[in-house]
Image (cartoon, rainbow, N blue to C red):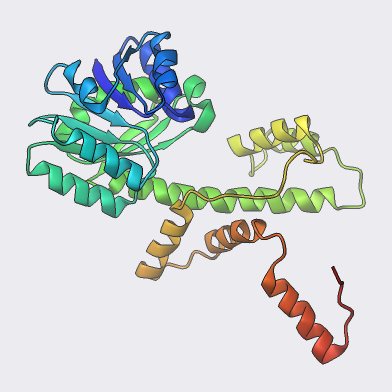
Length: 298
């Protein structure tokens, strides 16, 4: 099956490789021309512009976007809009806001162009293991693009989950759950590390993956990370967020759904980026003011 592919970052490049291995015909573009040359050496056809992608595809065409959410997606769509024709499909597989996905699908539908929003999970392991794909949008467009989803996902690893926006909405909640899971593992293993026992943390991670109720792929990755660096001395405790945790919180507030574990996990990420918390300093200062407690000076 033919597909145009925009965005050859770490995840996009791996997706193209997986499609090529399954005999799909990929025309690839990235702002970094070296990335295009590199993927062409693996069997893709390179393009030097967004328009150049569509020129190499038979109509009706499918273009897969794997670029950062927000302004980059909007810029790519602006670059494509004069080249798209009735019946073409645009797939946005980044972490776009589901509200943006709904608006884009509605705008392009007026010209007979379909937009599928695809929540993608799998990270750097996707090339080998496959990607979990959550697809929102027109069911007819989904069926046309299904061979691509089948090639990228493991068995049973993709689904049409609803109307436009549903794919990115489901992925957003998926990431909110991920935040809480990661926080729970992090806190639990910190307690183990600080105990009076000389515990083998990689051993415990492997042990818990054999029949334990907390077994998971994340625990397998925990074991692998701790095996390489048992005390994590080479890693700074600075944790970024993709924005989907914030989106999950937004939905929870709008709908009045309590999500305390996800909220605290998100706030813990914010705290991880502070070198010296103003709030913590103020608390220390107040304890000194009302109780005469000692304050650690710089």
